[in-house]
Image: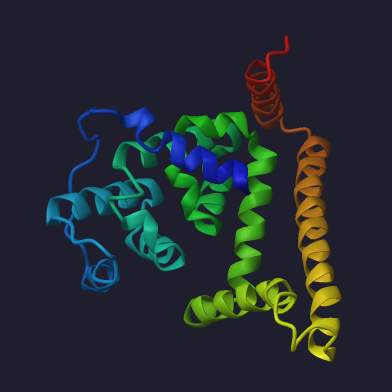
Length: 230
């Protein structure tokens, strides 16, 4: 997951530097305007409409584009997303896995549209694995409770660390329960993520799709170049 985050941050401007927009702006529906009002900064209508136009182009349907924004509002935030990067991301995904599977990935994990052509360094199986993880997280924590649930989870995970510095809590039953529970939670999350990604990779390899096989080989070659290997 950290690899995807680094790609987002490193490439969202790199691949669209000063290039003219490849899409026309599109007027935002009222529901999408309401989403943008929750952003910390204010943006011009032109900035927002360019991103909405890109989302319409990428998803091919206003309802699907709106669903992506509801799942991850930052795809409509000009501080995090660029219209040309969205188009480049879709093109990279479709080259790897075809239109239908690319659309499935973009719906499960809209943040993938912030990566650009560097998606090729991940490979289709890993991208599908990350998308499946994101979809599972959304299913566990619906949009209405996602924020409070995340805060509660962070507080629960931080409790053993904070409590260890409080003499009154040292040796308490609460700390005794929280420490192994947090350890188990991390173990399950890490192992579950690993199994999900490995399973997706194995499924792709066993399926024998020639396009995905070439994409995986290309991703492996890119990784080896980054590591200085031949």
